[in-house]
Structures are given as structure tokens and as C-alpha cells.
Length: 287
Image (cartoon, rainbow, N blue to C red):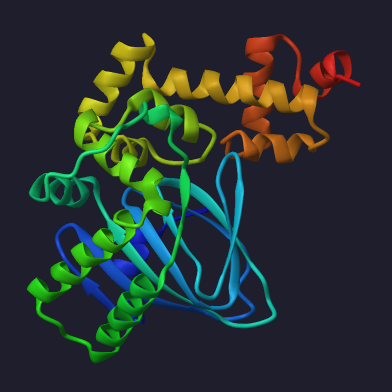
């Protein structure tokens, strides 16, 4: 199961949080015995570790963060892995594209940007003294409970300023300004990064910044396939690659490719490649 982490924290009464239209602050304390899990979010996320240690795992890289470290995590699907020596406490800052775009426009911020495809999924944030002080002040606000919405927005914008005015965080600034130029989320990039995850069609639409009907229309126009067929074929191609290039079991490959059960996976794999996965591997496995 993949957890919609934004909705989980927004709806759960247990956590200290401040909620706005385009943002969410959360204090999250994770006990030692919590296992690793997979999550997705259609909002971007800044995570700052108060204490403890955890890995954030994207499709192409693993980031280890400990007390005093921070990451900017783009919307998408991720896995996390906790280290069990100590409880994990973190402040999470969720922001959507509109908040970032308005921030960029209000302050006339510009930067030399690259194509969206060249940006990382996760950015390591250089935490200087001023950013560290600001985050701990927000931590204190969370403990107070009800805080005026205007003050929360000021703190959020101050947080973004602290990040992008630090030259060591220039890649994040470039990403922010690229959002202001690209309009809707890049459909091809988002789908190629996330097709192998077992998300609902509505969730894929959210990740792409579109309504469900617009998402289906845009994807069909771009890839010349219905969303259902495109996802099925991409997942089968991915599964075929895992069969020939990895030592994962058939059931592991099934779930890693986004399929829900092995019997269905075996059936549709044979329909496309004329052999069930196990026999295909025996014939094509690379030594």
C-alpha cells in the first residue's frame, strides 16, 4: 500500500500542524518500531530532521538525513527507511506549485533554468544558521496550537527566501523558477518517473497537475494510447527488463512493476511476450 502522505497528515488529528490553502506544516514523531513504507504526495515537501536518522529513496538515488539535515522533495512516489537507534522527529513543510509560482512572481525572482527533465527528484538543502533558527521558531509555533494564517504564510515565505538566497541551494532556485515557466507539470517526465507504482488513475492525474479527464485526454494525445494501455505496456516492459537484468523473484518483479497480483501479471505478460515470465527469464536472462 502506498500512503498519500499529505492527506494522511492533513486529516489525522494526532499531529501538531498548521494548515493553509497551499501549504501545510506538520511536526511528526515516529517511534522506533515503525517499519519502512512507501509514500506519495502531489505537493512538494521540505523535511527538516530534529533528531533521528532516515533514508529517502527516489527512483535513482538514496539520501540519508540525520538531525539538522533538510531535503526538498518534489511531488512523486518515494520509499523511506528508518534507523532504529533513536526515535525520529521531523518538521514537514508541504507546498504546492501555486504557492511557489506566486512566491517567484511576487518577488520577481529569475534564474537560468534547465529543462525540467534535468532536475533532481530530491534536493539536499544547505542548512545555515539563519535557516536553522527559522525552522526552530516554526517548531515553537507548532507547539502553541492556533496561529494566525497571515503569520504562517510569512514564515513560509521567509523559509523559501532563506533557502534560495543561499548560493549553495541554487539548484532549488533553478527548479522553482522553472515551475513558473512550464505551466502544467511535465506529463512525460512525471509518468516516466512514476509509472511502476501502484497508484490510482486519479493519483497520476494529481501528480501531473490535471483533472482526471484532462489527464486522460493529454496522455492519450501525447503517447497515442489510452492511459490504461500505456501504463500496462510500460509496466510490462519494465518487468521484462527486471527479468533479464535482476535476480528478483517473479512475485517481487510483479509488485516492483506496479501489478497487484502474480496471476494477473503472468497472464498479461504471456499475452504480450508469448511466454510466461519464468520461461521468458530462462531463455533471455543475461549472465
